[in-house]
Every structure is written in C-alpha cells, then in structure tokens.
Image (cartoon, rainbow, N blue to C red; front, side, top):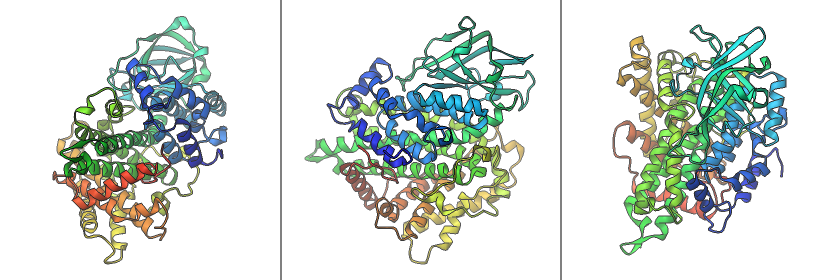
Length: 575
C-alpha cells in the first residue's frame, strides 16, 4: 500500500472491513448491533483499525504520521462512521480532537511524544466540558493552579470520551481566578505522571445513542501534575481552542455524512426488495421523493463540508466563519434526512433484527452531530456576532476564491495551524462567489431551474448585506431577538448554495466531464435538486423534488450501490 495515497488507504480499509450488509461478515452490521446492545465497543472492529494503524491518520507526516490532507482523513473516517459511529468516535475521533490541540500549541517534545503514543496504537482523551457550563468554556471551573514550578489540579470534568481507556489526556483548565480571555490553559497530561490517590474516575454516563462509546468523568483533589504538562503559553487556552475548533468542527461533522450514506443504502435496499400493492415499495412516487430528497441533502452537506475542509488548507484566515457554518448547517440536515428516511422504512424501522435493524442504531448515533463537541446554537451565536462586519467588508467587496476550493481532489498546500485566525475580521469570499459565478456563466448554459434558484440566492446575499450592515449591539449575542438568528440561517444557506453552484460550475468548465465522478458533478440535475431543497426551506415551501429530479437521484443512488461506490460527490470505493 502507498501510505502517501489517501484513496489507496481508503480502498484498503474498505476491503479489510468488507460488505457490512453481508450476514456472515464478522465485521458486518450483525456483530456491530450485538456490541451496541451490550453497550460495549466493537472489539473486532477496533482490532482491525489497530492493524490498519488508524491513529497514524491523526498524526502530521512531519511527526511520522499520515496526516497531510484533511479531506483524505474525512473520507477514511466516513468509511468507519458508515459501519459504526461508535468506532469512529470511540476509537478515533476523540484522539484526533486531542491531537489537534497538541499540534497547534505543543512544544516539539510534547508533539513527538504524543505522535509516538498515537502511532503505537494508544489513545489520548480530551477533557473540555463540564456539565454545569456546557459550551461556555469561559465558565470552566476545573483548576490547574500553577505556582512555584508546580501544577496542582482540582475540580472535575464530565462526559469525556475514552477517559479510562486513554494513556494521556488534554485537559482544559482554569489557570487564573481573574475573568477574561487569559484565564484558561490546556495541559497534556500522561496518566502515569499522576498520583492515583489524588484523582478518581466518575461513573460512566448512560446514553441513548453511541452506546459503545465510553463517556465518563474525572475528579481531582489537590493532584500534582508536571510543570511540563502546560500546552502553549499560560492563559492562552481560549485562543488555542478556537484555532483547534476550526479544524475539528469542520471535519467531525463531515465524518457524520457516512451515517446518512448507510441510511440511504438501507432505505434503498429495503424499499427495493419489499413489495406492496403489486410492486416494489421504491416504485411509489412518495417513497422515491423522500429518498431523493435525503440524497440531495447528503450531496449538499458533503459539498459544503468538503469546500470548508479544503478552505482550512487554502483560506485559513476565513475558516472562523466556515467552521461555524458547517457545524450549524450540516448537523441539522443530516439528522433531518435520517428522520425522513425512517418514515419510508415504516414498521421495519422499529424491528431490532434483520437487515434494516442498523438504521435505528444509526438514527440514535447521529444525534450528537448537533450538540457534541459544540452545539449548533453556540455556532449560531458566534456567526450572529460576525454578521455586521462581514456585511461591511467581505460581502460588500467579496474576494476571489481559488478553483482548488471546489475541485474533487486538488493539490493542497500543507495545513498550517499557525495561519488559522481567531477571527475572520469580516473577510469571507465564498458567499459572494455565487453571484460572480452566475454572471460568468455563458448565456443559455444554465438549466432554467438552476438559473432561477441561483438568482434567488444571489439576491438574498445582496439583501443580507443591506440588512446586516448596521445591526446594533442589541441584535447580537445570546439575548438577541429570534429574528436576528434567522439572519444566520439565511446567510448559511447562501454559503451552501454558493459552494454547490461553484463546485458544479468550475467542474463543468474544465471539460473533464467524461470521468467519474466529474461526469456526475458536471450534470446540472444534482445542483438543481440541491438548490430546490435549499430554496424551499428558505421560503417554507414543500421540499419535494420534481419527479424528473427525484428519478434522476434515485437511479444514481441505486446505480452506485450496484457499482459499490460511495454516495458522496467524490464517489469513493465503498463495500
């Protein structure tokens, strides 16, 4: 295997796991469901990931790992989430979240130590949250008192993934009693360095979904920690977290697209084989409409998240906006699409055995996409506060964005965490790209529906620019009028529409329409379907697609299942 080739690594992982629908597959859905019923991690799957060396995907190549491209990482993790989201989070993603903080702020010695630990197959947990404060990280009370060359820990952290299964953890702690942005710091702590008499694990939390993920807590009582545990400068924890969150919020929710991929596969397989009223269920227009709508939503989520992931490499100064928008939009559209698909499964959705049984597990497991790591509401508040400056700067004079932002797998510059900004300072070019692309499209080349929908969102961008320019302080923040929050929802839809339109336009303009998946992306029908759904949501209209678009998407999805391809825009190998 060429370790430098992300698609080759993905193909190998798919091959090792095999077809999850195959009844005799020891890594298939049947044993995954058995582990879920028991509330335990899926051991055979984790063993396979260990043999594959998944942790190396989280370690930058300069430190001996394989992390060069975040889009490659997302595709590999989607293959895992597609089979068992508990493996995706419980084996891998929690170590990735912790690692990003270390790569962002650690000393060379801390980074190499963490890299060696991960590459050896061990885990690093990350302890951000406290139940009393939720997403209000500035309210964190767990203390790390740093005095006279010593660090003493007091307090507790809750709902931490893999805390007892990890060999080390990143702790976000209060290091100053004073309020303000310099009151917290992250620490990288090896468990072996702690006095076991000075801390205790809290009982595991029972959860509705992600039953195979061990969520626990820890409580410290005057527990000494090495002075070398401090990550970055004392008091710079909020800045480190804000930079790290841009990567994790963008990529983690994108990984959840794998769940909807399997949800669609399950619905298509079930409705194709089940016969009612003299024919297959999938022949019913309403069923086809629901499946097609969910597929259009997957394409929208995939396209937007992929563009934002590439922006981390290409436009790091603008990702404080895109990361929040991806979390806010993608998590909801994925959850809503899974809920829609549950209706076409009917009573089989509730049956806990048989081929469709995996669907109920996935529907439970996808819920944390909306609140895990950071809640949608927190991202919405953050975006709202940025709207006036965006309207006066980035929207009024939109900067051009590179073609590579919309390509399937372009050459990307090395990811630089140092270039990630705390604030976008009102600069953002994606939303304005739609109007520029619409103006650049030759007359007569756009499908009538595409032209109308794109025109609507270009006009919406102009209207938002006028409405948000002079928003007062009373219209921003957590106490703002609900109508102010509607501005965020409208703006994010413009971002999604622009990402999808420009992905289609810049792919079709290259002339590479003969290769798969470029041929699909160059077809305006998927774009028409996505824009139709976005516009219907914006106007509170029925989101059902026209029959010709529904038939196109259902046929495409069924054909990809037959060809063992993924359902996303990149259409990777998929077993």
